Amino acid sequence: MLKNNESLNRFRSLFEQEKEKFLSSQSKLGEQLAVMPEEMMDEVDFTALNLEQQMRLRLRAREGMYFRKVEEALERIKNGTFGHCESCEEEIEAKRLEARPTTTLCFACKTASERSEQIHIDGHRSKSQAARRFA
Ligand SMILES: [Zn+2]
Image (tube, rainbow, N blue to C red; front, side, top):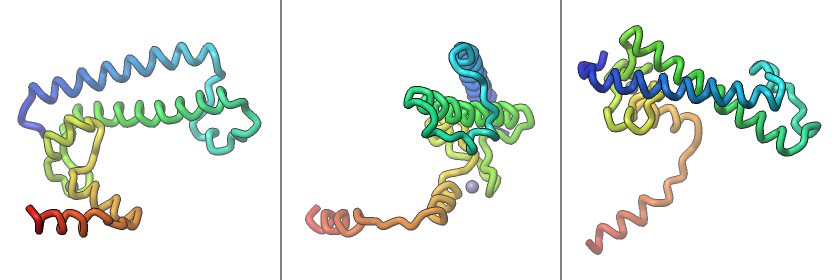
């Protein structure tokens, strides 16, 4: 658990604000567009909808995903695992938490999972080495 209760409280109120913001925007959206269950999203024929509807649906799906993350984060604050890496259980870097409060992986694990997801072609290395030679 984070030892610093003050920052834990700060994160909690941040998440609660986000949650409220989301819920109020959802109720506004709901009047304009029928609510669609998340599991149906994959089966939606987007081409049958007009562009504005498509964009709204996609935005809503993305917001829904973020909302779930926020709820999970609140849950982790409650059970005392917030701020710890889901994978290696080490504490997540404070700076990283500040930048992405809903993150569940420390920097090392996140990097490792990204690396396994995609092959990086690092074009910067040779350049920076060359630059160092002249420094
Ligand atoms: Zn980790």
